[in-house]
Length: 326
Image (cartoon, rainbow, N blue to C red):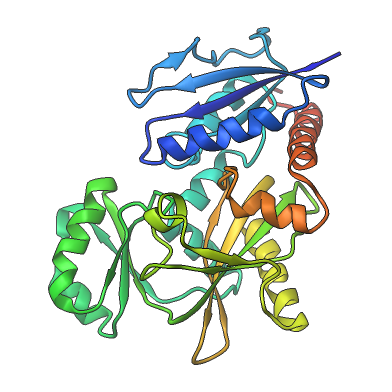
């Protein structure tokens, strides 16, 4: 009997197009002998096609499991996960808490710091107080990175080389979020590591990102096709083990389940790894590194999708042991 998979994609965020591309790749990979694929598209205006999922438990909505492929706000931030929890349906990926914590880069960094994980220096600025001079005094060394706290795919990010460029960078980030992070620029190399699992997560072989631009921005990720990746990453055995350990530690710190990609910076001057961010719905396009790292580690794309659905169904089964009423 086929498993009915509702693939939820599109959405209202600035990463709408990437979501569409990721979902198309996932739907192509779902074995038609095992799965009945049901596309659920959300337009940029928030309208659902063919219909919205109802937040009512016990109703047969026509599917057995949901595969959310919504990058960014209104999809990766716990909002859709909350809807699916209300509907009491199994779904792929992180729950409400992990999704919302991971999406907010400030909260994620605070949680990791509380666990003793390496986080670079940063400050938070709010949309109603865009004081460039104060920011430059608080973080006097350049370069600095200015970014929206709740967005991905490097949308709205600026690399600032002097205080003269700070005001414009803050205003750009403020277009995408009312909460803005300004981070110390860590000069060095960029790495990514895929994590998979529920209670016992495991990390794949990490890869290195070799940007063609000033940093790994939106154009470099999705448009220019000039950034290069090295898989496996050119690291010592000890460094590889450290990246994988930190990736799992970060994953567990935010209480993630299903999947996530953890991004790192290796500071050239100190040789120290810093956790940059965690993405609970990483890209699944044909060029995305999350599935590529697992493929290198022995789990091909189609099998990875199978495993994610298995993890979703297993988590839903375990929820049945939880009492919600007296």
